[in-house]
Image (cartoon, rainbow, N blue to C red; front, side):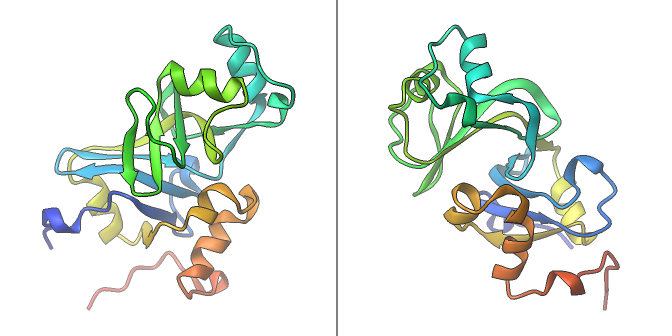
Length: 189
């Protein structure tokens, strides 16, 4: 089976199937920020760094964090570019270098958005993450055909509102699937 450009999944959620062999993605939900014939880039939405907070990031960047920044989780966006900061966010989208994924979600990785967030004046909804997930040409399509991932339309509440530990199950249930019935065995007719 060949994928056409209309089959690309930019702006979709990737939901890891049980038995996915890469521990970086076990029970993850990933937002695909870009997907084309050159590959794909996404941000994992339900992995948090165990010891870093927004305050740590802001202080490392020599920004004065607002009170409460120690409560901002820092996500592990994936195993690629692990020292690069990515911010997934809702409107507004006027940040320098903002890449709009869909009408309601953008991705930025420039200082202006981090300065605004550190000062308490950034976008209302956002996720700060270190790193991203990446796939080479045809790699993601192959993994989807091997039953490694489910794909789903984006639901903003899964990205910004649902508690981290509930995102995978919530994403599966919103597709009308009982998570206890998922298996890693692929069926082919």
